[in-house]
Each structure stands twice: as structure tokens, then as C-alpha cells.
Image 1 (spheres, protein in one colour):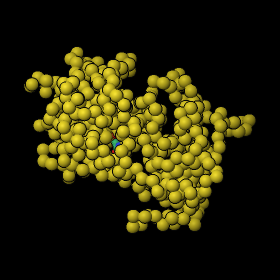
Image 2 (tube, rainbow, N blue to C red; image 1 turned 30 degrees about the vertical axis):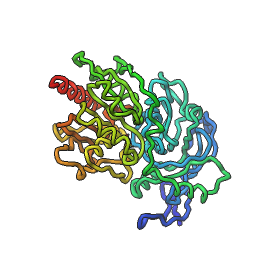
Image 3 (cartoon, rainbow, N blue to C red; image 1 turned 45 degrees about the horizontal axis):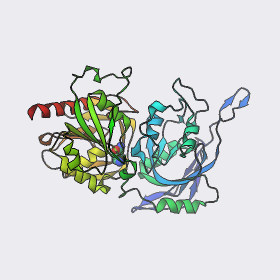
Image 4 (cartoon, helix red, strand yellow; image 1 turned 180 degrees about the vertical axis):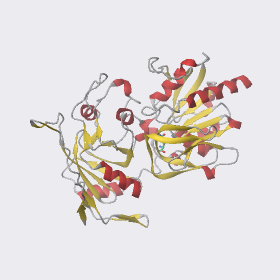
Length: 424
Ligand SMILES: NC(=O)CC[C@H](N)C(=O)O
């Protein structure tokens, strides 16, 4: 059933997804352990580790070592190609319901610090890596990644063949899986658990959204700001719908001169309009955009009443509110190296992305323009509907983590609000 490759890991054979299901037999896939050695021998790892398993719905079992919290969790497994920025990834609420596998083989070398949090909590289900850095060294670091995960009761595993798993996800598409440190649970039980769970059709934004409105004032630290210093001093009143908002979206808006009120995902459109906003932001957020019709309704009620800007989940909600449809992609886009073409300027931006769903451009009514295209697969990466002052991006112009090429999109939103103010 299995053959050992020259790379030292056991390559499972006989697994295939046919006719929508898997022909499953459980297959153990092991990675050769990476050793950390010095001239004097093996270095003792400075974290507690115990045995764990990742069992995927296709029947593959990946023995691992745990460096975070113990337990058993079920989620959808996605791979992220960012080289670093793992702390921003851990605190991006859009990863709720997912395990994130980092393709960069070594993670943890810069530890964690309080400034790099993208939300108050880690909402993802667990972190999957090849190797945990044995040393933590950075001037901003306040604790190790292992301590951070354990304190936040978050599972983290290492010593898996993340390259083989990534290739499997690319070939088969997204897979559900179970991470477990519980030795009493059988492989079959974990497989059953992974196969009886589904992320599609579930409202995940209501778990991550704030519970009541609040004002946001923080800006990007001027020492680090690179783009918004040239703004004209005007201020704009913005309502930001929190579907799982990342702090850096708020910091960037604030640096561009926005006075922001963040509101929960269920905040009525009528209440938002009473606040007389210059613009409305629909944020990123986790899960299936077609599972939150109430949010699409809110967006519909606000269309045409003020300039709007959608980011990621916000873009998907706008796509639906304009009459379009969303669909689940094979394995999505997660990473800091996605080329996107701006159709209006012809310029290519290298962008930060995190999404598993996309808007189907063919489903959109006339007048809606596809402004950006993901050059890896030609999928829709941005929309505009000028008659209603709508703009949206499927990716993350705020970066965190990722390149800053797309920051000008915030300027675009400011210009949209400015021209709408001037014409009213
Ligand atoms: N980052 C996001 O907003 C993610 C959007 C949506 N949940 C998706 O996976 O496609």
C-alpha cells in the first residue's frame, strides 16, 4: 500500500477521490524527524511535546508532535504560503473553523509580541508546521510561540511532512481533518469525526464579530507608516461592519483620516444610516459567504446610501448583494505572494490573501466591473459598481502579514468618499 521515497517519507498510495467521495483505507504517513544537533549531540527542545495525530477525511494519518494545547479538534485544513507573519495569521478571525498549515518549513523563530495581534483572540482551530524553531530571537519578542499557543488553549503540531500534505490539498482540494493528542481515540473514530463535519453552510461570523459598537482610534505607528502621510487632512466618518475584522484594516483607515465606529455583524442598516456616515466598510470574516443571508440583506439596504468598501468576506457579501453568486474554490488562496492585476491600470500587485470562496463574475449583472484578477488562476479579485460608489477587494490591502503593494486601495476609498461628499 505504501512506498518509501528517496526523501525519507512514506508516500501513501491508493487514495483517490472518485465520484465525489473517497475510497478510504487508513494510511499512516510519516515524515523523517528533523534533528537539531550541535557538536556535542542533540539539543533538548525547550518545550513540552507529546504525540499527536492529524487524521484527514481521505483516510491519511499524519503522526506528529504537539507543542501547544492538548485535545481533539475538527476543522478544515488549509495551507498558507507566507514565509512569516504567523502571529498575524493566528489572530486573523477569518481562519475560524480552519487548521492552518504553514508551507515555510520552520516557524517560531521570532516568537510573539503584543503589537502584532490582528484581533483579541486566536479563532483558528490549530497550527500545523514542519519544524518549530529551537531558538526564539527578536527584539520585540515577549514569549515563545509554544507558550503562546498553550496559554491560549490552541493546538499546534510539528514534525509532519507539510510538503506532502500541501501537495495532497492541491490535488484533492480542501480536506477536513482532526488534530488529536488523545491516544485513547482510535484512528477510525477520528476519521469518522472528520467525515461527519462540514464548514460549508455554517454562519461563522456571528461567533467572531464584536457584540456592541465601539470607536476605533489607533493609527499605524508613524515610524512605520509609508503611504498615508501625504493625506490632505480631511476627516471621514466611517462605519465598519465587523464580520471578523483585522485590526490593521482599522489602523490603515484611521491613518488615512477616518473616524471609525465598528459595529457588530447584525447591526441594523437603519441604525447605521442614522449615524450619517461618509462611507461604510464591510470587513473580512470567516466561513461560507452564502451562509449569512442576513449580512447580505444589510449590505443591500446600505447600497447607494453611502460609498462602500468591501474586503474579502465584505467583497463576497457585496457580490451577492449586487445579484451575484459565490462558490467554494478548490483549495483557496492563503499567503503573502499572490499576484493580482489591476485591470484599470494594468499594474500587478503582490498581495496578501486568505479566502476559500470567490465571487463568480459570470453571475454578476451588467454594470458591475471586475477591477482586479488573481493571476494565478484568473479568479475575480476586485469589483466596482460606480453608480452606487461600490468598491471591493477579495484580498487583504492592509497586509499584516504581507506586502504593502495594495495599500493604495485605502486611498481609493478616501477618494470615493471625498467625491461623494463634494457632489452631495
Ligand atoms: N479573509 C476573509 O474574509 C475570508 C472570506 C471567506 N470566509 C473565505 O474563506 O473565502
